[in-house]
Image (cartoon, rainbow, N blue to C red; front, side, top):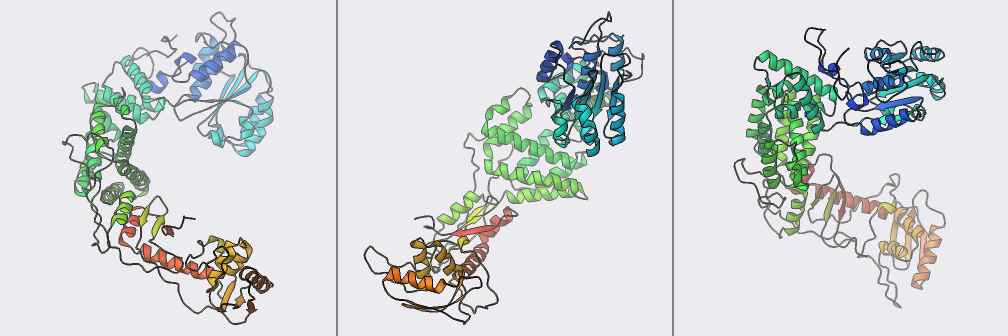
Length: 632
């Protein structure tokens, strides 16, 4: 019989007594007390067993290596344990010495059937289970089916299992395990008690790995433990496998001590100080130094993808440090991250960190897809260094708004270049310091019809910049009757202000243009008439008291009559409104849309707007606004 510690973990076997077992199997928990970080699950199952409230099916979900299959076997032992004297019942603390406990722990119990759904996915495999549940267990109290990676079962297999899963015989229990709970049909989930196994934090993993290394008589530093725990990403099994590998490397080297450098070399990670230097150089716009550092790290064995992930971790740490400085004082934060992190967080602004995060996050996927990972990583460093020299959207808008008439245009200067590593940390502020940005010239802008004031550009993708203060006049062109644009007038801006009629209280209504007629319909809450005048009228001729137009296809037949009555009511004079077969001019909606398109094109040609669009790929100019557009 194997000796076990207080938590139910199997103690190391004497050397040479049996074949070598990897650490992930050697230190697999065998009782609920040995499960790490799963207090809610342990409490629920313990109370259920003690009060005899056992469900017919359980489903366990969580990341790989968190202990789903191990938990399923512990449940099987707890339900089938008969105690050292052979007279015990279900217990949350299985004895480990009875025949059932020993047979289950050694994966040889005939009544505990484990099935891998990844390799047995069909209906025939499920039919074997359905046939087997009819027979009582051979020697155990319950016949237990453990199905690993249950989400891999086919749709038909799930359907075949539903009835048996809902009403199994009292001597049958199902335990499912999966890493993809969303792929399990809700009809199956509704028949099971679900337990989500929590991902373990770095401190808990490091403490567990330290305990295991002490039992294995392995000398490992705190820095190496931290690296292994971080690489495990919440998985106990992954971490124990890495620890096993590190112990083998240290033993082979002959010194027996597991140093941080050894683990970094094993994982293909760069030295943390080099990662800080690389990030500082690239955010300072020094592409040459950044490429030199990256090449040295690559020659030393660092994986390009791991380098980018390391930079992402540092950027995330710096961002959190700016929002909550106490993060750097946490017990698990290494000294280099505490010192260099506090220095960089004080000198970098939030906008620079956010931009670095976006570029690096996209770059990780590019490195994984690129034919040459190092070449892709170098291009990402160049891109990030170039982006660091561009002004932020806030600075771009401010420079446009403050630019005087006739100022000389210049390229934007470098922004947020960190100081060298040896410089003292900044004392606060959080906003990056930038060199003055040259203010671009603003040519005089003739006012477009129906619009006054200056223009500003709104660009999607989080970028906004000022635009050239120039708008094209209303275009004049011949209209083709077979080329009706069909613009929706509801999508157009508010009617032009310059053409609004002078309708003072008690005064006469003066209408000098057809645009003024359409605006008057909008003012008098005639929404339908206004929509028809803007989008379905091709004006042939206009003079006060007389309108001639060609209706667009789909225009109502009584449009001319309704327009005449409307004008007579609001002006008190008789208007002659006639329908013509002449082509006429473009509709108001079409002319306004053309003017907007030309204005967007002029704005997009502005050098500063082009710089913003290049900085934020995928951004587009969605609207050009003028001061006073929102004033009403």
